[in-house]
Length: 237
View 1 (spheres, helix red, strand yellow):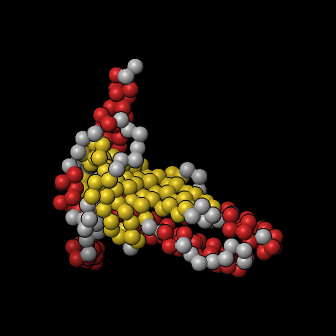
View 2 (cartoon, helix red, strand yellow; view 1 turned 180 degrees about the horizontal axis):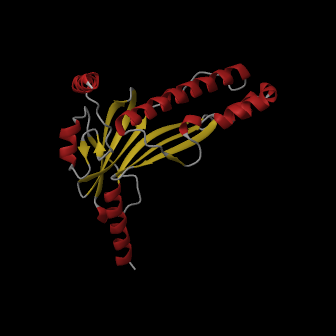
View 3 (cartoon, one colour; view 1 turned 30 degrees about the vertical axis):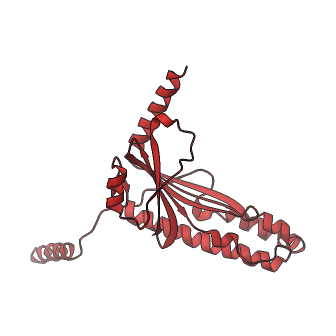
């Protein structure tokens, strides 16, 4: 009995010295909570740059949407962050990661070895990036499993690898065809009580498209916006 009590006391001491911080579901982004005004978000996040950008959506003007942009490193990767507001209330953020260097990679698409080297470069950097983002989301929001639309980002090059392995001999004589086959996309979504988190990857080497994006959206404000859109449409009938 004495040993058991001492064991409990030891565990309590360890818990006090090394507290366990439980991951919490998101209610905003970088301490900026859904519903904050643009000035409140700016003072909370304290970005180095903060500028209003043109709204690139088909939402009606009556919704009074606005977007502000800043730059930062997320999980160690440079990114553009866009903060979305409806009636000056924060409801969404998108993080677009900068992988433009992949589009300007120096290689020869008429040489198999050069194309293969390019593909391995894209593959290795992308999978490392995906692992880092998953690790960040797990540490921040817990081990909740995502749902997928198409491929799991962690398996984004699975089909491409299979194709290359199967057609490797033929591709040696048609490296430009290999180059055109460096194309894939993946989508993962986490649904929390107040927030939807989406992580997507879209790669097309031939089109110079390397889109890596993370977004968080307030579910309550999404419902509000959809309701307002429906009301505005009905007014125009």
